[in-house]
Amino acid sequence: MTPSITTPSIADDTTPADPAAQAAQAAPARRSPGWPRKTAGRRFARGGLAAAVATMVGAAMFVPTAAQAADPAYQVLVFSKTAGFRHDSIPAGIQAIRDLGSSNNFTVTATEDANAFTASNLARFKAVVFLSTTGDVLNGTQQTAFESYVNGGGGYVGIHAAADTEYDWPFYGNLAGAWFKGHPAIQQATVRTEDRAHAATAHLGANWSRSDEWYNYRTNPRNSARVLQNLDEGSYSGGDMGDHPITWCRPLASGRSFYTGLGHTASSYTEAGFRSLLLGGIRYAAGMAKADCRPETGYTTLYNGSTTGWTQSGPGSFTNTDATLTSTGGMGVLWYSAKKYFSYSLKLDWRVAGDDNSGVFVGMSASDPMNTSKGYEVQIDATDAVDRTTGSIYAIKAADIAARDAALNPPGAWNTYELLVQGERLQVFLNGVRINDFTNTDPARSIREGHIGIQNHGTGDDVSFRNVRIKELGGTGPVQTTAEAESYTSNSGVQIADHGPASGGRTAGFIENGDWVGYSSISTAGATAFGARVSSAGSGGTIQVRSGSATGTVLGSVAVPNTGGWETFRNVSTPLTGSASGPLFLTFTGGGGFLFDVDTLTLTR
Image (cartoon, rainbow, N blue to C red; front, side, top):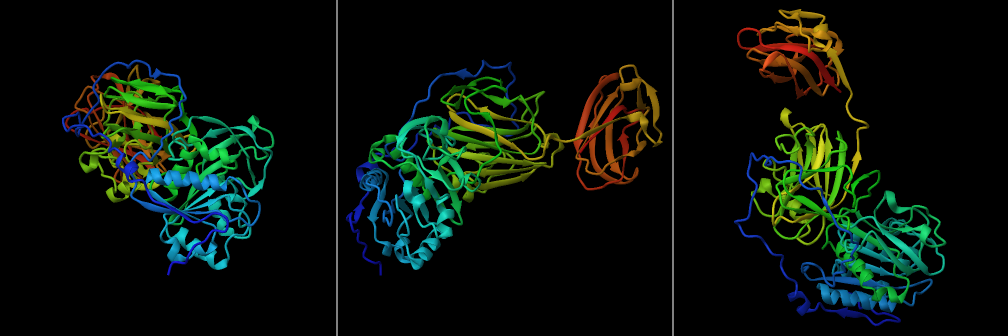
């Protein structure tokens, strides 16, 4: 039986959702089937560099009054019991959450009776809000029930003094993220937004100046939670943390936790910006709004308002306003030309207005960024064939559709991608959930190294991006060893040939079908790629890369074309696979006559 719930100083309140507000939620517009779609085997249209990325100035704060799309009806428990200091803002906080529930399809039950914390009663609620609770508010049995509730998929929202609660309960300290240490007097301070994709903070600009009581915490939660906001300690007096998180979120077992240190004053609960922050936190904790709340450290910003280091190729461009890139026209690509990457975690936030189309590229070639036959595109598109919709490796591998749909926020809301590139493996995470795992086997499309980019697909495909950041995982990149091809230590059929344009003026030449060369001083151990500088006025052919002997393990092969003359050189390359460790051997195959010459060879490790 569900226990009766009483409140010593505030009557229990159950606020039903407002049907009129639910009906007012408009479904996002969808484009007609006749709009442009991508096709398999595509290649970007050729064109010169598009106009520079348009830059506009602004830092507007969008404050929604209701969820952007109607959530299914659910219930929220607001718990405000105090066994220590009591905040006079509690009634205002309850009223604010009531108002949010009326406009956003959740029912609010407010109580200060700890007897509400039973397994059967908690099962009614998608989220439990600890509203400025203080001290020891639950007994052991109630704590056990709440732990099971959270671990089983329930949500927790902590507001302000919720961090001044249950100091002897380790689970609660982990759930809240940090315990209260102290605070200076109420004063104005600058709150800096770190995450502008989370439903709680997406409406905010980079900086938010407001008055509140600013807590210091005993520990820094950054290594265990995703920090959404921090305090600029230079903007007020009394901060003692240096790096000073003030709002954060985290997954915990099957549940979710959201905490904000804001909300001491009663006037806070009348602020539209703060109400929107609370709404986003409640929706996240209740599982209605999806977010990547895993801890995030060590990332370098590639875009957060500045397009320095980025290059637009092909038609169209991106507008740049409020630290947000929005695609316009196309088909083109904005790519980070300042650096290529090898092994990395790429994160970026994106939003579609409706059934729009874009993508994120990895393994791009700097010499030909419009060539999509190099590297891969991770798709953003609501409706198409399954291997061409959001989370797919475009036209190659569909996402896990069930996992993708469960993790996806609808049009109008922000989503976060993590693209984890390690060697030839590409994993795609959507709002913290892995939805695709792909390993490339096509040497021509290797993603071991390359540039990253975002697509502007075409008129009407309006996709926005924020906060592009990257974390390099493998140091400075691969090590390359280059040698003269004519420095072989064993061979069959190959002779040294003189060529003025060659490195050192000579090549391994007069190569015919079945010939080979060996290099006893060059080990294949750890080799991941092979490259050669070649020339040919003959029929061309194939270089096979082997380990140990001319008949040893084949690690890879690369075609050599007719280059237009024996003095005309070009580079060819291929990824290598396998774990052989013997000396390098090259074997040559092709048609009749002299096939090609090899000037230099390079192994990448």
